[in-house]
Structure formats: C-alpha cells, structure tokens
Amino acid sequence: MKTFKIIGLIALLIVLFEFIGGFNDGWNDVDKLAPISMERTNPAFDKVTATTFNVLPDSAIQAMNSQTGTAVPTGFMQCHSYIVPSGLTNFTYILLGITGLVSVYGLYNLIRLFISIIRKEVFTSINIRRIRWGVYLPIAYHLVKYLLNWSETRDAMAQLTIPGYTIQPASPFEFSWIGILLLILLTEVFVVAVKLKQENDLTI
Image 1 (cartoon, one colour):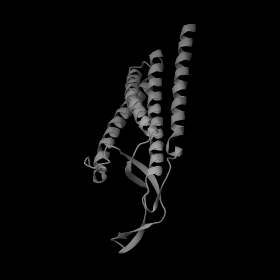
Image 2: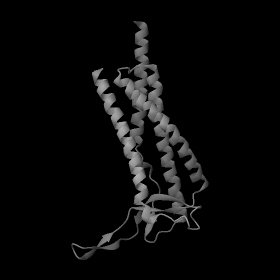
Image 3: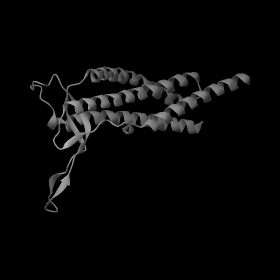
Image 4: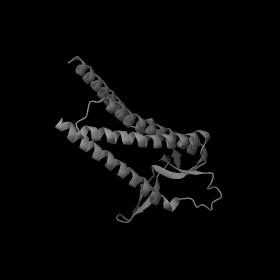
C-alpha cells in the first residue's frame, strides 16, 4: 500500500503540473499571435474566427543565411489565419465549451481519486465513479477538440488560397488513439479489480 501512496502522490503532482502548464501555454499563445491578430476595427472582425492549420509548400522560397552569405531553401509547415466558421464548426465550438466545462468535474474526480489513494483507500466503489468520470470526460473533450480541428481545416481548405502552399486536411494520426485505448483499458481493469475485491470480501 505504500507503493500506491507514492504513485498517488506523484500522479496528483503531475495532474496539477500539467494543468498549470497547459493554462500558461494557452495564455502565452495569445501574445505569440499578436503580430498577426485582426483589429476590431476590421469590417470582417465579427464574421471570422482565428484558426491554425498545417500546410504543404508547393515549392521552396529563398531565405538569406547570414553565416553562409547565400540564400537557402525555406518552407513553412503551419499557418495561422482567419475563416468564416461553418455551421458544423459553430456547433463544435458549443460542444467544446460544454465538454470543457464538464472536464473540470473530471479533473476534480481525478484529484479526489489520487487523494484517496494517498490515504490508502484504493479499491472502493466511489473510486470506480471517480476514475470513470476522470478519464472519460477528458477523452470526450479531446475527441471534440479533434473534431473542431478537422472542421476548421475543412473550412480553411474551402475558403483560403495561400500562394505556393496547399492546406493539408487534419490527420487522424495526429491524435493519440493508442493512448486513449490504454486509458480506457486501464480504467476498466481497475473497475474489475475493485469488483473482484468486493466479491472476495463478501465470501470471507
């Protein structure tokens, strides 16, 4: 049980660290994109939304290398621009907001789960609910986030023309499907372990 306590403490610290790190990254992204942000006075401001997508260069452009004194081939793999969101994209925005808010409850359940593990209260019925809420809600959020990326990229492909570049469709392989399957598998293994322990306790 001492091992469970150590693992629970480490997991709790990792969750808090990633939450703070993700919040800071999201906050700093606003400053990074400030040079190409659209002014509120722009007539199109209320109609468009910012998005980032992958692009593939049709041909290389030349950039001067100060060390060699010559031009070298250069290309860009990602682009930030503005699109008019389609009906599907607008619906996905709403869905993302809902799943994002509900995921906060999932994070709360994960924290409660790790605290109970630290207290050596591992195989309990309430932890079944906590681990399921804590795993499935964030998974739902990330799935909706991928759907939003796919929908925004589809809108960008239909609306934008970037000279020398081809907008790439969102790839399903950018998403960690194996990681999701492992999380689901480990969650259900934990649930089975709790139920087996409860059955064993009843037979004693």
